[in-house]
Image (cartoon, rainbow, N blue to C red; front, top):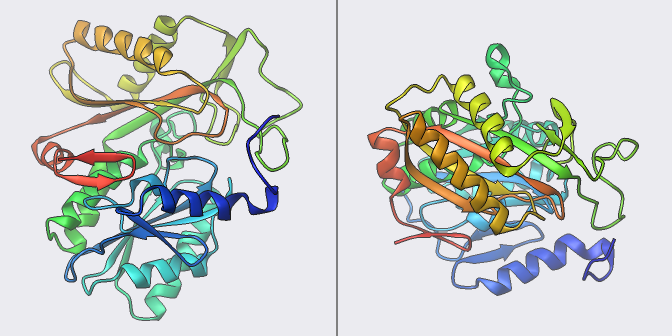
Amino acid sequence: MKKFINNPANLVGELLEGFALAFPEKIKLRGKNLIIRATPKQPGKVGVVTLGGSGHEPGLSGFVGEGLLDISVAGGIFAAPGGPAVADAIKLADGGCGVLLIILNHAGDIVSGNMAVDLARRKGTTIESVLTHEDISTGPKHRHENGRGLVGFLPVFKIAGAAAEQGMNLAAVRAIAERMSANMRTLAVAIRAATHPATGAVIGDPTNPLGDSEMEIGMGQHGEAGVGRSALKSADETAAIMLDALLDHLDVKAGEELLVIVNGSGATTLMELFIVFRRISQLLLEKNIHITRSLVGEYITTQEQAGFQLCIARMDGQLLRLWDAPCDSPYWVVR
């Protein structure tokens, strides 16, 4: 493993310090691990907070800013932050109308998030939470609530952040975030797992690494096992396999409108991602399904893990208006 780092013990602190220094007009580092908006939201609006491990940049802190998150609580490398730090963020984000905490479905995040909600409520803060769980490899149709949270966090951040910015109350912000969450599905594929940047250890199962001519559909954000290992297939073949599974899981019909996100996992080039998106577009056109909005790029990564995540989401008029609303964060700007 080769990395441009200093003392591995200082990875997260130096990462967050550099991140804040790079975007001083948009974000600030408060304390050791709170990334907050440089210009706070006006009082009287719902706060929006999230939490998650570091090492997945730009997710999650890259989406703190106007029309998106108020605060992101960064944990250690691939590790959730502690509940008390999240509770501090909730208190800080409360402008008098309550706070929505968005949690990705990973065990450590859930433990910390639930602890933070309990602590915040004991201190009198009005707090609600939403769990993203759109991964179909771990959340089959009859147990969709078990799905891992992958790049689908991004539509939920955007919809909830826009709703809060526009002055919706906490119940309304939570309801529309839940609707966005319920209407999206994600599936990932990997051809190489990542290594831990501090130790060099392969994350996932180091005893059973992917071969040079293999791929694994359903591999998780941290190298967790997928639903099937196979010989490496072409971009078009892989796109078709993944899209068919997603359309079936979400029960998408001809004539519907979808948001499509192709998210690179860290070591997959934009060339590859655009080739995949090209085939996705062709297949949906053949099925008379319209791509109403799209994103292609890296939104949540895992160091040098190679592969991509494909996310689809059913959209309607209200969701589209919130999607198109202005936002201004380090890694997403809508004017």
